[in-house]
Length: 385
Image (cartoon, rainbow, N blue to C red):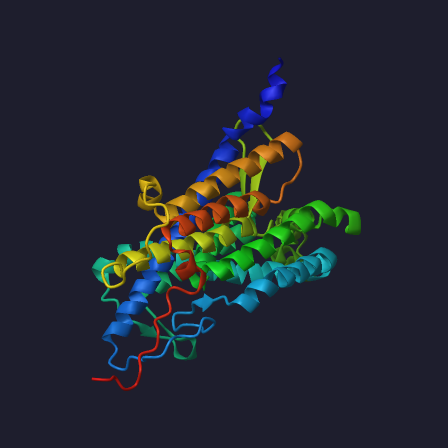
């Protein structure tokens, strides 16, 4: 049998594939820990506040630190909104590409500053008291926040002037971590609605959009470069050399890793294939922490299968993370075998969601996880003695 039959197996250990696997998993883990840390800080602030409220917080209420919780209605309509956005970029990209590039640059600046913040806090801790500096209507910021924002702006400007793929990946990583940290799934029901809808969305636009629009809409939008705003400004100012030197920008809506062994080959993974499963893993990490914290006060339901000790020792986060890895591996094998773009969520959603549902059922946690486990019931105003 010729070696060409095993090309798909060799490609799995290619540097571009390995980089995609490692970086996507690290982003999910890091973003989940940042989200959990934000929750703990907010909880500590509430504990120190003398005016605690006894009522439950609505699921779709935006918290003080900018966190947005998705409810069931938003989860059902998000794939529709994503489809509309995809069509707008497909049909009007040429006329609106500068707007897309500028909006992406602004969002990437803020997101990458958030990614750099812990490092800046560590570096500046010895020479800063942590007090916030007022900038009038812009708000109050610590020295570490200003430092991270300045570095982020520098990275974005270098990316605009060079268009280098490594800087684009860095900005995309910041967007991944920020979205995982600032967006919350309140329950397993919302998670199932969201991921199921996005699975259908991904499959339709990758496999079936060609029959309607004579092009793979998802791939076309993801790989289309945008005109550099610097080049457009230079053209208006009649600076031909600056126009010639300004590179086209590949927008950071994906991670791209070139192969060092196969010139011209690269591995690409959309941010949605990281962020959306990442939101589920963030939810189960918060649930694992919540269950461990309240394990003494509340008696969990009796496990349905007490003999499966491995199931009961394995955390939900580890179960979902293993499922994500297997799903990503399956998607990679499918793309190599069929030599065509694959909807990654077709593999990621079943391999992360189904084992999680099965494990929650076996542990007796399914009912609790399905119905917003983090909400604290409101206490009665008058207690009977």
